[in-house]
Image 1 (spheres, rainbow, N blue to C red):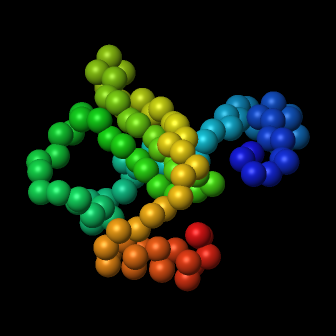
Image 2 (spheres, helix red, strand yellow):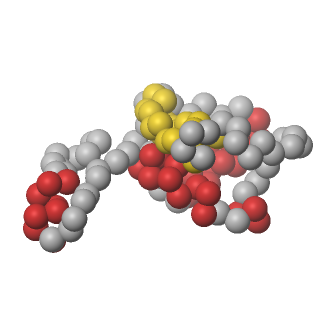
Length: 112
């Protein structure tokens, strides 16, 4: 686990808790598998364009760094495939009033 000395072993979890199969994954990979469970009302469009039902999807957000996942449509499986990544461990440098408000909220919530 990032920033912790924990060792997570899927095989040990399977054996200890009598679970058939355990797969340990990145947090943004998990979000990628669950993103389609959201309702349209849960989403906030960033621009005014039409939605492509099989177009690529990107997920970006704060974590221990800049978490990322990319979803690409696999037409032979008729489903998205999730590819997780770690964007960087850079600093957030807000520009403008809105971004400063986001920074202030992150500080208030103690996530920055």
